[in-house]
Length: 287
Figure 1: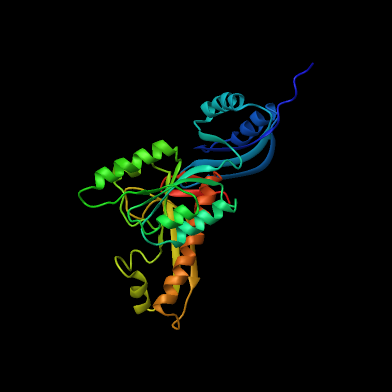
Figure 2: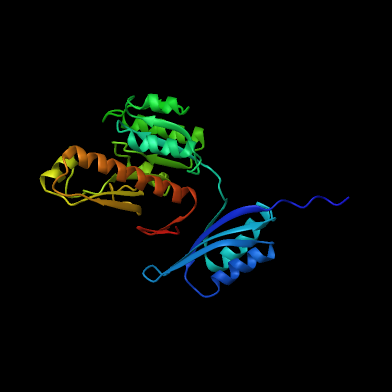
């Protein structure tokens, strides 16, 4: 009796390499040789960096080992950096918080409603204010207080949590502590932050009051990968809302929180769907 055919798996292949002729042909040919049916394909050649970026979704009955072996050969020819993942795989994610709840609640709700392809494996807070929210959603809450004297110890605890939970993504959901350069380097491309877009004009405490006093006309938010350069990592997504003179400080805060949560949600989703590729200090986002 013949063995039953292997069911097809829906794969995501992402790659970057120096731009040159034949890349798309080589990748498509490799997939075709392994029974691949391409369901989505996007590519971009950056004239500034000279790099080529590509994201392909394809269904194939080939095993991961077969595709990996074949892709290794293609990558060797073109000097590629590449990843292979399964469409829809939920990315193990650790969320870090302080006292503001809006981004945490939004991410947990989106995960529970299955619209967000992440698996939140824990919530880390330097305060206990949001522990009840994590408990409500059935997530482990880890209280890791941070002071100037305990910062190194706190980061060691965080590293342990990342390792123990298998987290592949760390989301700073209004986490109000600065991570060390060393930790940022070690988790490069794996930490996403969200902040208001008043920087650098309105720094420190009370940015919305400062903005109100100056009569701002736009409220915005930026979500980016975290690097050692504070709030200057590669940008994934930004959004804005227009406001006018009639808005109070409280109005601005509410509008800002709404912009922050949806901007962060899009950045996390696109990262989890392997739609974000790093291009030096920039990103290529295949929406």
